[in-house]
Length: 374
Image (cartoon, one colour):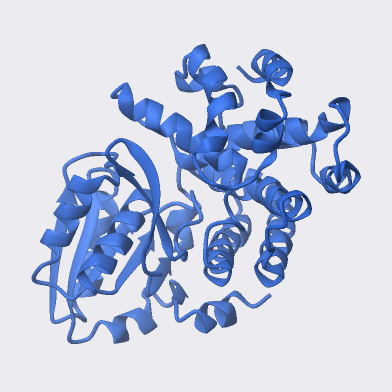
């Protein structure tokens, strides 16, 4: 698939650095007032970006959020929206949270936004939704798609290995969430957008084939990962929601994130938590035949057979320095157990967790999962 043609279809300038710059973006910002938004961690990348923007835009300002790891909550969204008051374009320098903040602040203030990506760590670069923390709860809100996604693969390839692993975790999750979507169509009659489904499934397979290159730290592997992360966003736009990219594994991640917030603890990378949830989802699917039969089960079993094993996902994540046990993330044992029984309520969306919890199978499965993955 041609990622550039696909990006153009969705009105996004997904631009690789060429000849020392981003000529399409630089042309697009002529006459504009651009605010660069970064945090204490990504500030090191922001100044060269500001120099580039300053040579082309009518005005360039910089907002440095006073944290190495800001949270996309109401107060920070307001800070970015107010900071952009005198500007007409918001450019995030970073990855997940900064991208979300600029997309949503731009959506609220009717200003376009873009992202200079510093790590291939999540799939929200090109999506039209934004996960936010509101009153301590994880909420997904409609937002705008980024106008520009700027990629310097010299920087992206040198991102911390665990951030690359987080991006891979977010992609491995698609095996599970697509299967969740498919079994929901069998068991509840939920409609599946086949265009979005196929686009995401094909991209995941292509990315999976690039795992050896990613392990070796080769730029080609990172480029394929970024392509797949962008395609995930496009699949969500086609579907009109996050169904092609988010299932039980994301619900587990969101449940844990809210617990970290309640305890005032640093929140681990999204893709790291999702990777752990992916291992659990795969385990649930692969042991499904040991549960009582149910109407439609043969079709569900057939979908489960297509999935990789949880051991495969564990091996890939471990090779990229990602935790493969929930205890490695300072998650209390009771919290993990609660997650298994309660996370399916995070969204009104049928998943393998819903199947287990509503049929009363999770009680026995939880003991197995706790022993294997805590």
